[in-house]
Image (cartoon, rainbow, N blue to C red; front, side, top):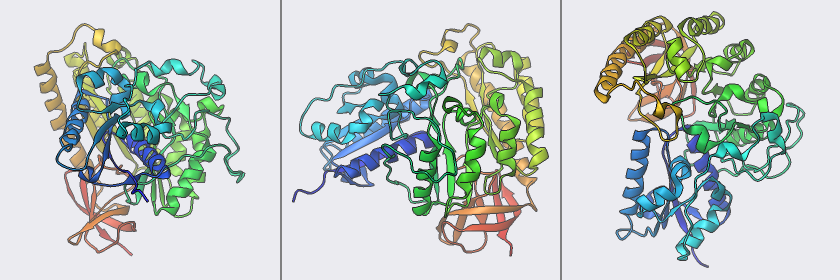
Length: 479
C-alpha cells in the first residue's frame, strides 16, 4: 500500500486563521493525507498567510520563502500559499513570488486535497484571481440566507441556512464542519462568523473576507461539543465582528442566547468572546458577558481612537465620553472585568489635540491590555487616498509616546489586581514553571498568570494575585 502523502500546515495571523487551518487539516486528513508538524518532514507545505498589515504581509512572504528553501534539502516538493494574503493578492502574489508552487483562494478550500494531489502530479494550478468578496452576497444581510455557492472558511458549508431554536436538541442537517486540531492545548478558537459589513476607511479586510455571515447556532454548538470531547476547557469565540452575530439570521440578540448554551457544553469551563464593536455593544450583550456564569467577563472592544472627529474620518462612531460611559456600564456589573483594545496612531489628519484626547482617554479608561499601531496605507482603502498624512518619522514618534504611556497604564492596572481572586486556566508546565491565564487575559496577547504551586495543563486553579511583572500576574493557589 502506498504511504499517505505528507503535508504540514503553517499558520500565521489571528485566531480566525487558526480555525481555517484546522478546517484544511480536517479536509486533508479525511482525504488520506498524513499531517506532520515539521515542514521539513512534509512533501507539501501549506502556509496559511495573513494579509492584514504590512508587517504581517512581510512575515507571510518570509515564511513562504523559508518553506521554499526546504525544496532540495528535504523531502519537500511543493509550497502552497493560502489564507488572506493569497485571497487578497492571488495571481499578483503568484507572479511576484514564483517560489510558491501554488496560490489558492478560499474557493479552493473544499477541494484542497485534489489541488495538492494535482500539484504533486505536476499539474499546473491556476493562481487565484482576486475579487471583492463583498459582492458575492446580497447587500441586505437578511437576504443572505438564500445565497448559495459562496465558500466561507471555517463554516463547513456554502449555504447560510435559517436559524433553529437553541436548546431543542435537534441535530444540524447538511454538511458538518470538518476540523482537526493542530494544537492540543486547553483553549481553542471557535468561529462565530466571518466577514464584516462595516466600512472603516483604514481596513481592507471586508474586501477579501467578504460580507458578514453568521454560522448557525446549531453548528457552533456541535463544534463546541466536539471541542469539549477533545479536552478543550476554554472556547474562544472569534469573528471579525462578534456584536453583529445573528443579524443575518433574523435575531440580533442571538449571541445573548447562545452564550449560556455554550457554557453547558460538557468539559468546557470558560467561554470568551472576542472582537466587539463599541457602537454595536448593546446593554443586553454587556450583561450576558458580565453576568453569565461560565462566560469570562472579558471585553475586547475595538475603539481604534478616542477623538470623535478623527473617528468620523475613520468611518467609525463614538468618542471619549461615549467609550468611558460604556466602560462604566461594564464595570458597574463586573468590577473585575478585563478590557482590551487596539488603537491606531498617526492616522491622516490626526492633530496634536486628537493625540492628547487619546492619551487622556487611555489614562481614564484603565484598560488591561492595549495594542498600539502606527498608521500605514493599505491597498484599496479609502484612507489611502486621504490628504494630511503624517510623515513616517512623526508616526513613529507618536507610537513611541503612546506606547510608553500604555506600558505604564497596563502595568498599574495589573498591580491593581493584587489581592484579587482569579480563576487560572493552566496552559503550560515546564521546569516547574506553571503558566496560565486568568479570566481577564485573552490568549497570547494579554499577558499571563504564573502560579507558584504545581498543576497540570488544563487545570482550572483558583488563586490570589500576590504580585506582578508588567502585565503578567503572579498568583498563589487558594483552597
